Image 1 (cartoon, rainbow, N blue to C red):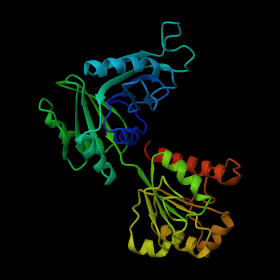
Image 2: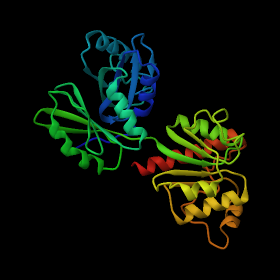
Image 3: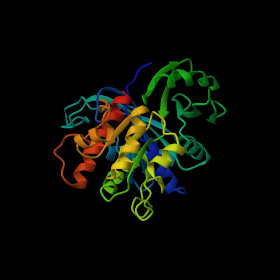
Image 4: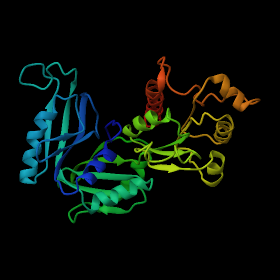
Length: 341
């Protein structure tokens, strides 16, 4: 097995397909990189019939050429692999000033919203994972969920691929893996659900945090007892708006260890209840707004655990809610990347 990947773009791809259910697209996926490149295996983008692109798989140097290949794929309905040699420095190559030094293999296929994407979407929204097995020889994809359910399996597909589900899941990352089988090379991709970000507090300063975190593919749940603040009008990109006191919510709901939590209520008692709850039960990320001295008072006489982010956000000398939102989301990204290394 080989290949080292990055976050795949599957959730954004699904959103675009769902919003444009009647359209056909060419989907381009980076399936292999030799050397260095702007993005790694698993990066995806969509190109519609008018040549409009959604997403990027390079720094902008490949996208224009990919639109021409996408047009061919949509016209012929035949998938293809395009190779870009970024090592070349002459005018005939793809490396002119691009800063890359690798060879990129891109698989382009026709796609559009259908029952298969609906099944994949449902699995991801329920918190499950989906593995895509792309058989390059047959130019077919097999989709299997992490509970070993076939979501799509063409007649000529190799059903024995199900035996690789547990092995692939055990890697614990979103890597694309190239594996040589008797029937040719297979590209395996792990489609992961969005990480859940629980935000306790619905103040005005939370709005830019939620807006930016949603763009970074977090699924956001806001908890605040103030109905005039905790509503879709103030947080249109949040997935859930729960009007409830924090301690009541925590008594009635379990937040799993693999989730992210932000405490931003500005209320001492509410912050204290949430903080003390999660200090006893750790999560992937726990950040609390405010000076470290205040956090110490919240936990007194117990010390602040090293893994608690206090004050919240990366130290970029941020001022104002917008800059603070950037610092918080930067820290969220850093933590997420460290988990999926």
